[in-house]
Image 1: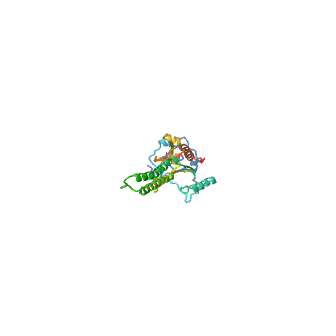
Image 2 (image 1 turned 90 degrees about the horizontal axis):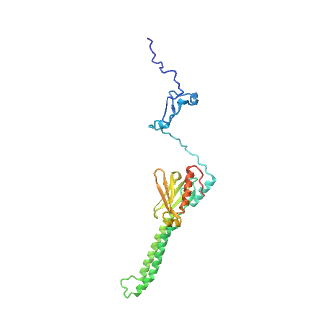
Image 3 (image 1 turned 180 degrees about the horizontal axis):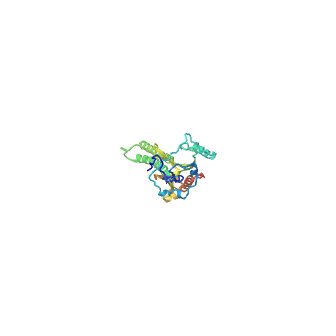
Length: 271
């Protein structure tokens, strides 16, 4: 009996190495032997069809690494966009606008929100000034003034009260006016001031805005055309609200058009 050489290959000689023997999870062919350049250029036959991803094994995951340039190329900014950016920086120097970002709409709060903070001090001032002569007449007509503070003391107390009320009112007016809402060609910026010494800024990219709407809940808001706008974002489902907005229907229309244009890669109109 002839002895078989153990070094001799037992693999069949009729294997077609141009055909894949399996496919990976992404549908790419796997070969038993690296194909030649000519084999890679040959069109796939019917039996080389890539399997459907729905039937592929998704238990394994692959990581794809992307390289980033050490000095990325600066984006091309048109002269018109740069002009709008410079104008926005000049008008709103406190905003942190990126290169090429400009203000489309600066949402204003309706002055009706100041009614209480202006009307109440005026009423208190008128009432206090009228109370001084009435108290003076009462002080003179009283047969016994023992235990009653003098007119000068009461006048000083009322004047101090008037000054204090107006200081509180001016602080409230300042806080009200410092709450601002800006729409840019890239994001929504909301400046929120809670008190004289507490404030923060919120910035939401237009790409993350899922829904934008407005509300007018009573007849007063409809008569004076003001209301509140509401933004909700994707993912964490965060909600942003801004109240006492002048003409909220128009502002929401501008915002929705900007979001749609940004997500679809179209130029954003600032008209």
